[in-house]
Amino acid sequence: MRRGRTFGDAGQAFPIYITVVGGLLFLAFAYFAVGQAAATRSEAQTAADAAALAAALETRDQLAGEWLTNLLEPESWQDIFDGKASVPNACWRAHELAARNDATVSCSPDGLLAYKVVAETNETVGDTIVPGTESQKATETATAVIEARCSFELSPGDAGDDALPSLSCKGEDWDLSPDDLLELPKPEDLFDVHLAD
Image 1: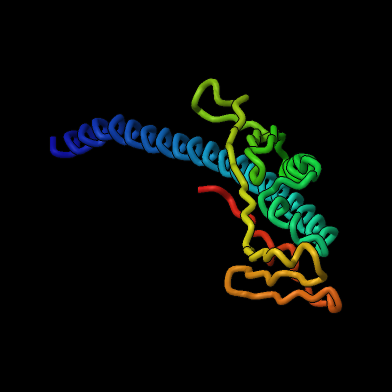
Image 2: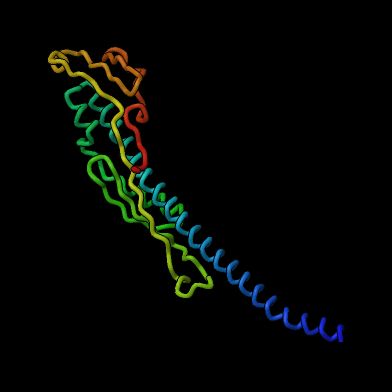
């Protein structure tokens, strides 16, 4: 009688065991689906960040080039530092970087010194246990900002003679002379590029 009872208990535990294992497998697949979605979103955010920064860095370099071109005309410097110089739109760099990150982007200037990018992954989330997610793509947004790092004092005499104003760039001073233009600030000295918070 005791032996029959033991086998009977084992038979009752088996459905509970199957239910628990099935539940754990479902949770594992659900976590995997969430992980896939998070990874796809992360790829989209990386693509958006890289694309926005690429466009902003290209514009920074163009503005620095404008500053060099107009170095002997200090009255034009402020417009350059304010982003008012005539430089071409650099969204082509955003598209180029997005293609490298397997994404497509829409890019537009956000004011004079910023670019806003919306990136969408080319790959979908993929097959998961969650219905309807197989064809979903991730979309993320990023904005990159260009900020002038330098300030200067334009005295009344600077426009009329060959003197150039000193440039103060966040802790580093540049005493510029028209007779010695070998040591000049680089683009990263003139402008800071970062993602907006």
